[in-house]
Image 1 (tube, one colour):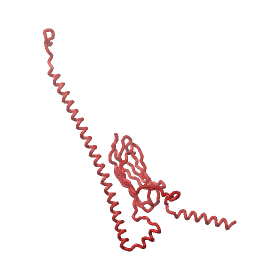
Image 2 (spheres, one colour; image 1 turned 90 degrees about the vertical axis):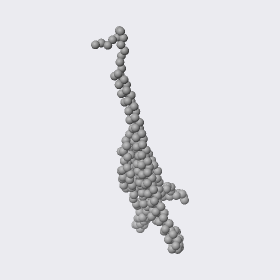
Image 3 (cartoon, rainbow, N blue to C red; image 1 turned 135 degrees about the horizontal axis):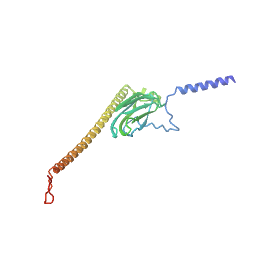
Image 4 (cartoon, rainbow, N blue to C red; image 1 turned 120 degrees about the vertical axis):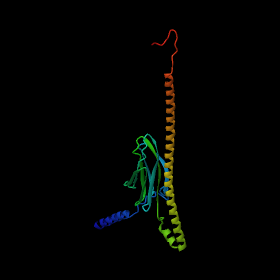
Length: 241
């Protein structure tokens, strides 16, 4: 009886140790169907209502580098405060970093595999909506390879290895160029909406001032005419001394 208990304890200890040493990869599901993980990067604009919260989830492996940038392009409504709060959370729900500004970035290395949560909060504007441009995703310095691919790579010659290394560097540089291009797009759209808002403001204010000037001229002419208005005299109606 005692040897059986010792054997059962060793089996349980082995299972716990193996479970702790596994990677944090999600389960793929039954059969050969893989888990839907989405794309590695996104860029789009979203409208957040007054006092609203919008959240997104991005899948990343534990060996990647996560980037998240945002910029408030315009405000709509009574309030014109362009500040918003952005937060990033781990797959376990722990807070990574918080940014509260008109534009900002949150960059970090992913230490566990799963879906990372990104949230935007329009807390400053209780009477106005904001349009926010988002650019987030994950990239990896080295592509993941299984054991079979590593064995095949050992059979390649130095020339193909050099070509592969050069191609990887070119792809990395193109990716960072694409990120800088998105930064320029965010600033360009924000400047465009600012110019459009100023243009509409100047036009409406000029129309209002022109209307006030015309109305004031009409009123002045009316009262000046009343000053020189002389009543006609007759035999029965004469001015009194």
